[in-house]
Length: 429
Picture 1 (tube, rainbow, N blue to C red):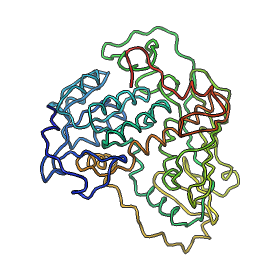
Picture 2 (picture 1 turned 90 degrees about the vertical axis):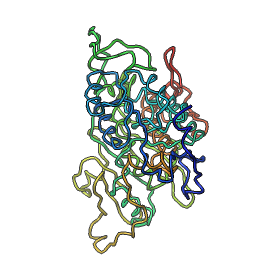
Picture 3 (picture 1 turned 135 degrees about the vertical axis):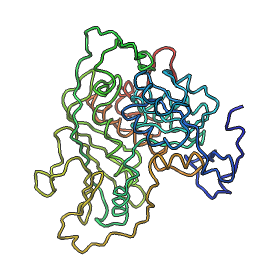
Picture 4 (picture 1 turned 180 degrees about the horizontal axis):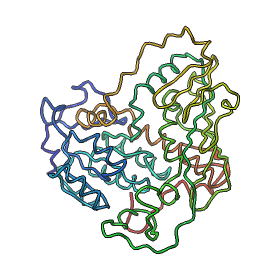
């Protein structure tokens, strides 16, 4: 029997807690003092972003570590000498004492690993974007809901105080109704042809396992560990890299849901990689009493016109809400109401969004108690779908009339090629 089968259960009603993803959650409960019990966690991907996530859950029992790079794996094992080590995540998932897993691999393997973990009834923390394709995101959302597991997508800034205060200002009507939002990021991932020189795979790397579900391509050190986002085969460039972080704020503040139209403007598409610059216009319908919203994404050297007009301070990456009564400019750690003279006497609304106990801590608490997480797979999948649609529009050089319910661009059947996941033989969700 699984370790969890020995644990005593209590119901969410008894705890007075909400569900995790719309279904009845299955909390980790060992004793009446279960919140103080430690989870048995497996960590898949232990360096770079994975190292940061490992730090985030290090206070629990780290019982298994997995990485396709044995050098990274050995360093992590020095910190957690009692943890079992693996290069193949499928072997890690066979452990019967696991309660939860943390996934910090490249985008192209997120969905398969997360799906297999949920098949084992394991709680899952997965880095953003949640998936490599739109269809994968919808699949994980539905599976998480049916399993009622504690899930969290790794949009760590969502837990910060600044985002909460911005959402409170917007939802309190400080700048009036908002029908226009601008989001921009200066990072430039540059499309390039696949390398053609033959380079032997280093002995400490299991390259076939790194490829996982995607079609085989010969090894090259340009792909891993860091620059894989420059090829469609593995990632989605700047939009997939930062879209979930910066679009998170307007999605949260304005309850945006899914767009009905997505249109990308950029350079002529490169067949093998993402554009260096891009502007994507998302159009969202009315939501109850909230007006329709146009949100525009800019990447590379592109910026909203407000900078040229001299009405914005020269910040770096950011989000601009345009309201009936004024503007709100925000980045990760600060925000300002504009024009300043209009808001000189403004008193911020009384906080109504509780401060987070921490992005990783939220998920750990949800695993133990059945409480909600703020970026569960229901929220994270919808955000990921919307982000990835911008790249689909770019690749077909055509706007998408988007039917979110049926996951189809009604005006562009050719988009299906880039919406759906396709795996090499032996791999599946």
